[in-house]
Image 1 (cartoon, rainbow, N blue to C red):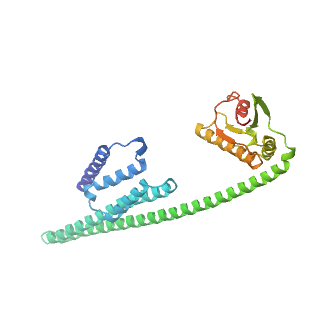
Image 2: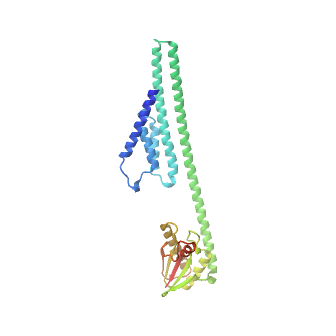
Image 3: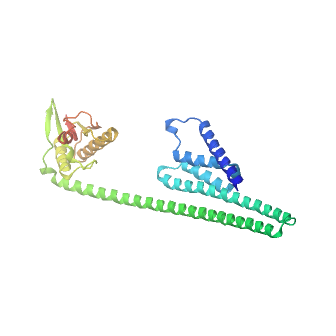
Length: 323
């Protein structure tokens, strides 16, 4: 047994060295093609298994399934990644367990042969001592076989759990999608009700604050005219825009959205454009018949200091220039 463990340790060392050599010999990848560290770790474990002389050729079917699961993980989309990783992790463990089980079975066969040889030799030695040795080897063989069977059973149970987890994840995804559709429908209904109320209030609504810039008039909607982080207008702002559309008539209009400096620049630019487009849509719907151009400039062109809450509130705005 000591000799076996020594060979086993040397084989594992050779497997680790082989995995390291494969990693060093792999071609360099760019930042855009960076290997997933989870995939790399699982591939290294399989490479270590392949390089283990004691386990060579063992657990072939489970090893193939593990390689296929790791390949599936490498190309899995983000929404499928967690379940693919779960399956790949369990498949790699199952491959190791299967290889060890096959190796134990082979060792059991070798022990049986050794026992038979001892029985032959026992004729020339003390019969009782030979029988005791044979029984000891038989019990060791049975123990190893039982251990191998336990490993196989555990691997099967693990795979079943992985399949159930995958099914649960898919059900959760479908439920989330259904709730998302329900939320979108509720928002649409709320926005429709908002528009109907704003249309009724438009005739009496005040115009947005304005200032003259040369021959043009610039109307300003404050950031409070929108729901936080969204492009949906409040009822009061909606009604004010509908009143403004009556005043604009066929004149040309430029609508530009702005944000404060907090948050990512790309997100701020996108939000400012969506708000400008929402304002333009209401103006067109309410009778503004001239050309309407929209733009989103994010945190550019601040009118106040972004270092204070009051300054940031002033910078969150939509300017409507009428010429």
